[in-house]
Image 1 (cartoon, rainbow, N blue to C red):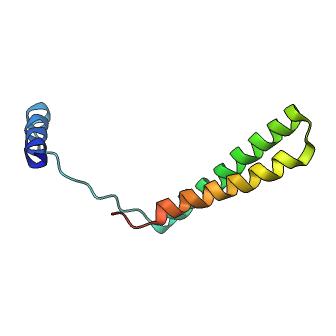
Image 2 (tube, helix red, strand yellow; image 1 turned 45 degrees about the vertical axis):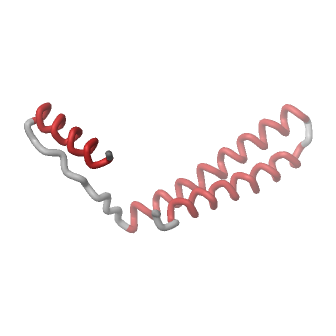
Image 3 (tube, rainbow, N blue to C red; image 1 turned 180 degrees about the vertical axis):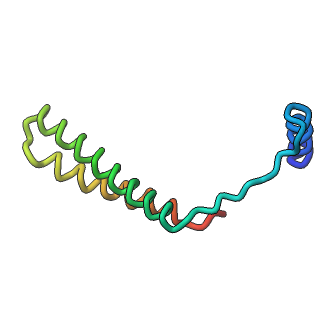
Length: 89
């Protein structure tokens, strides 16, 4: 069934553009991977920091929520990096 779908998709693409669609393998450089890892970690920490700060201001629980959500943001960033680096199945 999958082969039939791929064949029909390739035929439709050929009719639409006049060319055959080819598979492109994404080759990423070390700089690209390093940048993405940094962005994943930093953005998760910033989101955790923002949520913790906002909850502290709203609930008047000064540093408690900030500390909790910075740790949660760090854990989320590490989980995202783990998923990024895990081998594809």
